[in-house]
Image 1 (cartoon, rainbow, N blue to C red):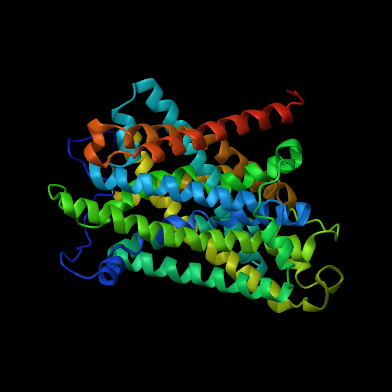
Image 2 (image 1 turned 45 degrees about the vertical axis):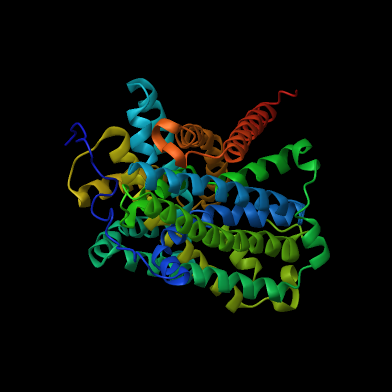
Length: 446
């Protein structure tokens, strides 16, 4: 089952280079060909983990944390562009390169941290999907978790149909999420002036522990470690002749444009979530720590006023299901990339995907069984999982910045000076904020 990786082994071999790109086509036709990977990346930035942290952030601190959403999204654009460039230029993903360029012990430690990050990501996706099934169809939570664990079989079927089909299906699910929250925010009639002011940074975020905790939760939910591994891999689904300088340069250009467009959509969705929380729930003293609370509040006129209706609640549940399902597709792919890249796992694809899925589902299922009937405890995992992702992020970012800044690896496509310094600045800030949060949580003031 375990074997030494062969030289030249490709990331996600069954889809690597599977999509041909036109050589002399115009801008829009070429962009259309490269459009797709960015959608799968963007899904990770608007998964159910964002919902609790963003809506709770709006409900507790009104529009203040919109600045965190903006900064997180800009950071994501920078890092994902670097990840795509790494894959296109080297023909290897971030996990493969990390394994090759670190000692065995360091590689194992980084793999464990990354696997835990995948599990933290799946906590939100699995719980979100299971809760949506419960709200829509009255399916018990534990049964819903088991159903979501089987969606890996759907991914196997989709892979047989071609990677473009996966991209199209995920795009439809993203459109559903965007339309639902645009509609609900328009109904909520937010204060536009205060909303725009929320994008201006406030020093209060750093001095208020609960606000900082939610801010880091938003960062963790927005800038996802597993997405950096995923981005470095699926950027290679387009067939690029790496011996042709112009072809590589064009691939980097259009992959970056695709990524930035889709991440802009993710930024809009995350902003809508926080704005919805601020416009409807700020000052209401409502308990919004769970998806069920949000579902019930949207049909309670005492909380949201005249716009309350069962339709709003059902739309919320539909969007939650769309978010959970689209996220599980990308999460499972990322799990395979990490498993193959770090420990060089060789086994049939169906078994590999099933294993990576079970690694993520099992802890959630055990927790759900232990706390059966106590959904508050189960959903309480969500915010913590998103903060853990923020803590794990530097362990993916540091190798990414190192490798994309290496002339040996990247040649003339290495990071420009401003990109390198901006990325290192982001990494240092994330580390400082996470250490600060941990110290404050332990009651140690500095």
